[in-house]
Length: 139
Image 1 (cartoon, one colour):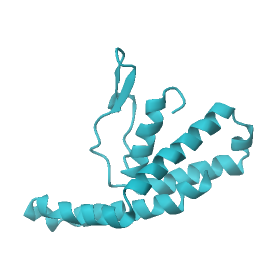
Image 2: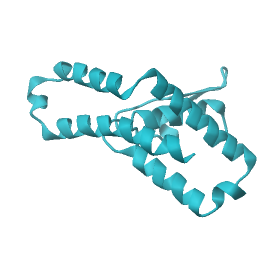
Image 3: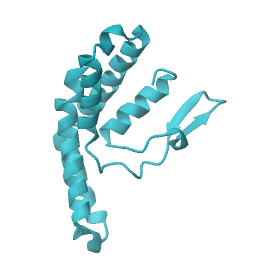
Image 4: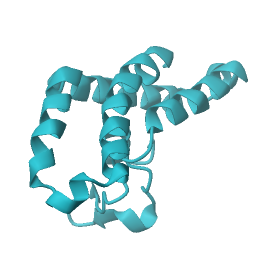
């Protein structure tokens, strides 16, 4: 995240939408614009990433890493939290739940019976609530 300001925004969005598949292959860099773009969000919405982020940050904090790490890393984490907070200020849990529920009719009828879809929907809803509880309170 600290290598380019666009990466902090991409990581915050990935946390927000529970995208577990961000890698170099899923980043597009346009040199002439000096901009990064996240591509391929197909592995979003399926995994409770907020708890994972919380555990990683908590571990770093408990091990004393956050008190010893370079200032630019702390600034990057602070910027990440601000960007994530902006997403939550813009899209409340209630709004996100309504949007998710609104999208369900657009899924093929035979998919609605799929337990995996229902689990993904509940995971996404839980992830929004968990992000507030975990990530936003630890940094």
